[in-house]
Amino acid sequence: MLQLQAIRDNKEEIINALKKRNIDAAPLLQEVLQLDEKRRAAQTQLDATLAESNALSKEIGQLFKTGKADEANSLKDKTGILKEDSKKLSEELHNTTEQLQNKLYQIPNVPHESVPSGNTENDNEEVFKEGDIPTLHTHALPHWELAKKYDIIDFELGVKITGAGFPVYKGKGARLQRALISYFLDKNAEAGYTEMQVPLVVNEASGFGTGQLPDKEGQMYHIGEDDLYLIPTAEVPITNLFRGDLLSKKDFPICYTGYTPCFRREAGSYGSHVRGLNRLHQFDKVEIVRVEHPQHSHKALDGMVEHVKTILRELKLPYRILRLCGGDLGFTAALTYDFEVFSTAQDRWLEISSVSNFETYQANRLKLRFKDEKGKSQLAHTLNGSALALPRVLAGILENYQTENGIRIPEVLIPYCGFDTID
Image 1 (cartoon, rainbow, N blue to C red):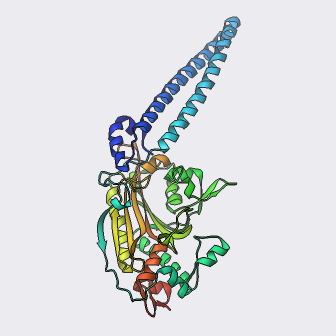
Image 2 (spheres, rainbow, N blue to C red; image 1 turned 180 degrees about the vertical axis):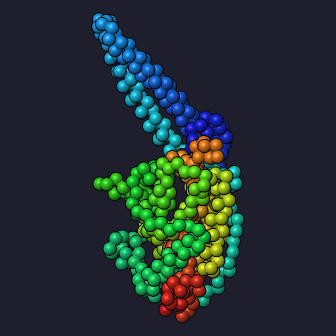
């Protein structure tokens, strides 16, 4: 959420910056400033009314003490009017504050200056590419057919017990899945991230804190009776560990990692691009989250990008990195790098990770602050990234490592799997 003071001081700059997102934010920002002015006027009037009421109450008490009951009683009518006025002003202040908050929730984060302009994913900027695309044998298959051939993932069985988008991993498929999770967590721990095990359901305040609500409400599974949400990523519970906290400069950097199943409704999309593991309602992901001093957050983002690179190098998967354009940038992000692995059997790039800096946007929602050297309270910066999301990494391994006699296991995963081929 953008800070009100920033909107007051830099309205035109914010409007121009949000044009990268193909948004005309001028009307919305004007509404915000008008509501802010109305809120401040109501607060000033309420404070004055309460002060007058308190002064009058003291005067009435003094009059009673000095035996001037008639004068005291004559002033009581005025205090009744002031109390009624205070009640109305309090309601107006509450309603205006709520309207203002709702309007602020509608404004996306301001893109970092390095974010390219553009409308769609086709305008994203490729900034890095590495790895050789393998040449597959003549009868190479996409991963959903390999899964059936070697009986390692059963999509139909998932439909039977739950519905589409909930696969069942079997035998070596389940062990490979577990191996990837352990490998990712170990790599993150080696890089200085503390492993956390967090709840898979969160309350509404957590959803608002990291920006999934109200922006992505329709994409989340909601538990109506308890008013809780299944998490779309471990980012939500891990980042919310710090909601409402006041940190000190010595606490930085805070680096956490966690594995969780993730749940996304992902409704209304069909075709080969969402077949098999390409898009699921439930999937596993290992996440990295950082809370940083504002001066160091973009250096930390570069470090996160390099960390994900090392994992993909060890897996020996061909990949590329995209800097997302304004039109494809997530609502809460200031800057995002997407990692894509090349699926040789599908002849297309598959997104496997997003690494983002949210700057103060999430921290403002979370009320996550720290005290600087002068003892002044400032908003921290938050970052997160996938390291990594399993479905498309698994799809890339199955497809790129297939041979005519089976599927080879990447060398780095063999100690975790306990086998070197699927056949």
